[in-house]
Image (cartoon, rainbow, N blue to C red; front, side):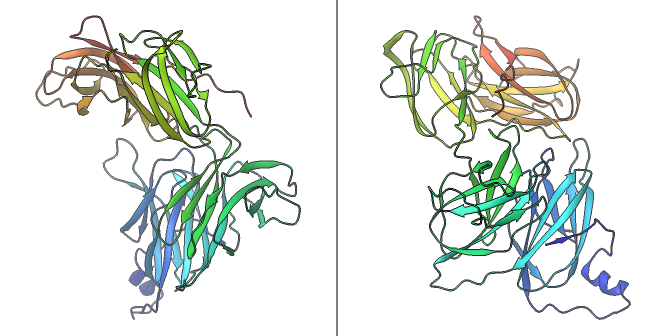
Length: 456
C-alpha cells in the first residue's frame, strides 16, 4: 500500500518527461489494471480521469470499472460536478508511475472539496484454464471505524483467535490470499477481540479464477447497521453487496389508493397475524422489520381475511430498506416496491417524488423558482409523462425556494400546485401525489421521515 499527498504536477505523460529535461518519449512495456473507489459518505459521484481522459466515476461505496493502461507516468485526476456549475471542478491530482502487471486501486477519502487519495498496489493475478481458487483482498474504507480483524470461513464457523486473515486500520489493504472457490462468510471484529463482532456477512459463493476486493465502508442512511461490506471483482467489474446477516430488512408501507379503504397487511401465507393493521388512505408507516428472503405480501380488508386485494411475493435481502406503495382503484389496486434512497449528499439537495394520483394517467412535473409562472412556452417541465407507478423519481437541486406544479401531460392545465418547497444542500425531501375528491385535481404531500429506530 502507498499513501500519497495530493500534488500538482505535469499534465501528461510526455510532459512529465519534458519536466525532467529528457525529450525522448517513454516506451510502454506492459499494462496495469486500475480503478477508483469512493469512501466519502456525503459525496456525489466523483469522476476519475487519467490525464484528461475519463476512466469512469464512482458514488459512495462504488468503484469505477476496471481499466487497463500502459506502464507510464501519469497524473490521475478527480473531479466533482457541483450543482449550479457549468462543468466539473478538479479536486485532486495524483501522480503515479504505473508499473506493468500491477493492480492499482485509488481510494478517495476525506473531504469532497480536497480529498485524500490512497493508492493500493498489488500484483495482477494471471489465471490459467484449470484454476480452482478465488483471490481475496480486504480493504478498510470506513473512516469512523477503529482497526478491525478480518475472518473468512465457511458458513457456521465462528471466528477464533489466531484464525483472522489480518488486522486492518482505515486506509489499509491486506495482501492477497487464495482460497478454494466455494461458499464463504466474512466476519469483521474489533481488533484483537474475536467475540466483538461488528459485521457478519450473509454467505456467498465465489467462482474460480476471480479476484475479489472486499471493502469495509461506513454504513449510510440506506443501511441498517453502522458498517457496510462491498465486494468488487477487480478483473471483470462485478459488484456484490454483502449484507450483515444479523440485520433484518425493513419495509415502509404507503397507502395511496383513495377508495380501497382500511386494510391489514400480512407477510405470511396463513394470514394469521397482520404486520400492519388498519392501514388507511394516506397512511405511511415507519420502517417495519420483515424476514429476509421471498416474502409473501397480502393486503386484505381490515379485519376480514376473506377479502384479499393484493397478493405479491417479493425477494428482499438482509440489511436493506424498501418502500411498498399501493395505489389505484379498489377493484384493481396495484403496488410497487422500490429501494429507499436516504443518503444525504453535501453538494446537492434532492427530493424523491412518487406519482400516485391514479385519476391522472400521465402528468408533467414543473419545478420553478418561488413565485414563477409556468404558463410561458419556454418554461419546460422537469419531468414529462409521469405515470402512476409508485416508483419515485429523484431530482437533484440547488439550495433554494421552489414551487412544484403537477399538470396534465403536454398541457399547462394545473392538477395541483404550487407546492412550496424550501430545500438546503444535503437535504432529502420525499413527496407523493394523492387523489382528491374532485377527480380533475390532486394534491402533493410531504412524506414525513420515519421515526429513527433505536440503536442496535
